[in-house]
Length: 172
Picture 1 (cartoon, rainbow, N blue to C red):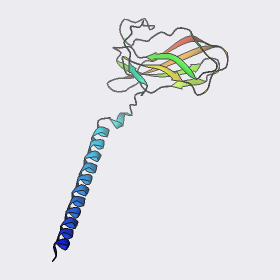
Picture 2: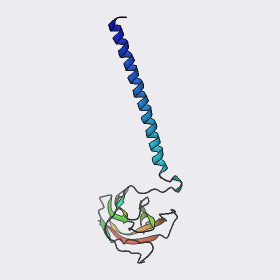
Picture 3: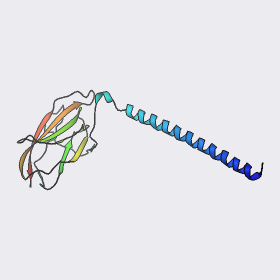
Picture 4: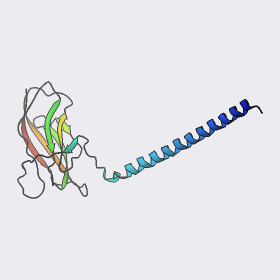
């Protein structure tokens, strides 16, 4: 066999070996990634169906307790608000005060029409959603805004006492 044929044969064998090694590495990475994804999915208890709002983040400011109770669930108060009739941005802070024994789920609606403006997923104690986006701008006028707060135990996700806070919403 000539040197040229022998060198070509060695190069082909080397290339086949490299392809086999790369294929093996790719399969190994795929298996590792699938196991990692399964592990991550198992860390979220699916049987409870608990979904936390992705827009919520930690809230550091001190707030007053509109519920008035020294113990139990702390309910934040909401001042009268004014928003633009040309915007869907609603600059409201939906807060679950630090130390509460429950997660909050907020539903914002208009008292006169019953129209639901926004419903959130769960918000952990100490977290807040800073602003929501409405589906459509509101017509100019003055409305009574109902902030309905449903509460769910952080331990068992069982429903607890909720609250309803009213505020005046002016749309200019």
